[in-house]
Length: 398
Ligand SMILES: [Zn+2]
Image 1 (cartoon, rainbow, N blue to C red):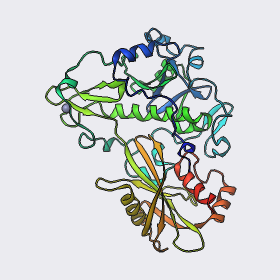
Image 2: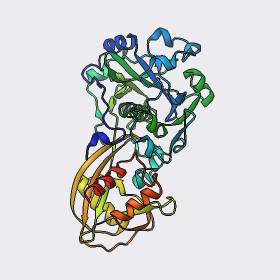
Image 3: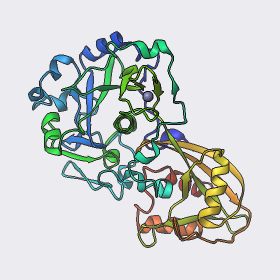
């Protein structure tokens, strides 16, 4: 399986990790002709003519709200602001649940619920925005050294009407930044950005190139992280942005905790039957439509390996004991902070006992049955989910 064929993977831009901690470098990149800012509003994308708006990044262009996204600007300058390129977009015809009507993107999950769809139950029960999981302990967080905390000057992230810009990547010589307009209402966000509508990021997948989809998802994930890390989880003091938006530091001199962007890994697995005929296990998750089956998935817990998580999830949800577990590929899944790790596993026996909590139904499918389901409904498996690829990979080996 090619990991680059999977949605939201393969950002072809340079994240410039060696440079983005330098405020002067960031300020200089921002001023370059062609550098742009991708605005998002409450995890959703601001679009015009059906594609994401991109604003000029240079400070002079952003000094006054009235000049933001002025007519004729947003669509001209941005990598993401140009007209869609259907020829480049992947799997447009398979999009199924999503579609483009009259040049406008329609459908999608609606705000804030992207995590619950597509990749199965991985995010079920956690709350769609994951705020509850973003506490202040564990992970890479720790006390910062006095020197790194002591710098309180410019951090290289300039305000956009008082807002911080987050550096995403270099596209050639041009910077790609993101800004969060979530502090204003929808109408004001549209006015500030010159956009016509807000749409779910995943709804734009069919009209964007692979790298554009990856950049947009990246922007959504990191802006969400900033919104939930404004205060230190250890002492409650406000945090400050560093490293172009890739680090926050507690502003309390006595604490100084460093907060790095955090991922929430989840496993997703295609389980195969131990004996002939060749079959795979799919489940119907609580809340899924009648007949809507997908691969099993779940979050990795503290103290587990990825393989441990596969075995536990399959046993918990479907009552199936699995033996060998084989890694296939992973997927960037910043909805809001996921990393989907895809596996194939072989069951020890075929007995199924669903938990009736996360899964309400599970059964073994032959390749012919799955092909028939896809033929009847091309949207049977969402094409922007790695689960789709796990199934396709298994079918291809038939
Ligand atoms: Zn603190």
